[in-house]
Amino acid sequence: MDPSLTEISEKGCFVALTYDHLHIQDIMDRVRSPQAGAIVLFAGTTRDNFGGKPVKELQYSAYAPLALKTMLSLCKDIMARHGLKGIAMIHRLGTVPIGEESILIAVSAPHRQAAWKAGEEALEDCKKHVEVWKREEFEGEEGVWRANRDGIPGQKINQTDATH
Image (cartoon, rainbow, N blue to C red; front, top):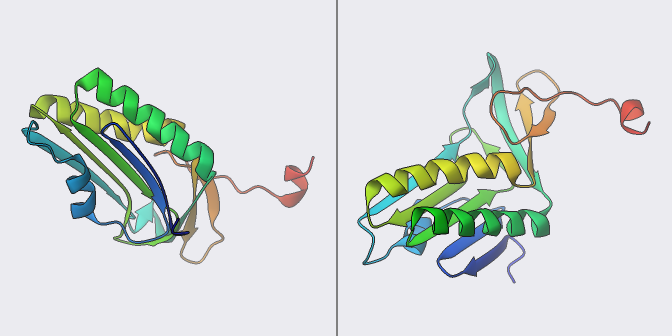
């Protein structure tokens, strides 16, 4: 297996973690189906600020074996609940510079309404449950690790606090 890519594919579901750049066309092709009238794609990109602070870059880390299992379980559940023809989720690890994608989610469904709902649910479930963490690197300050969720700034952990 290519060390830069870890993936699982099962019955219309594809999940992956990679250190490489993400490719929108590749993930859309994974969910394409002649029975689907809609493909919805979400591309999460690194923005240049968070909470009024200038962001230099983001760094993502994961416990890959568990993260992939969680991603696949979420995708299978969403696929069944929304009657999807396909769902794919790929998360980038390592350093993700400003303006580059850190996550791509694509879903296909017979009709657009199911695809829209499933895409949003897939993103929220991924952020809430998948074992991926990010380190925010700010201009002129030390970076902080935080859960891969929106809205909650990371907290610096002192080595002495972490060992007690």
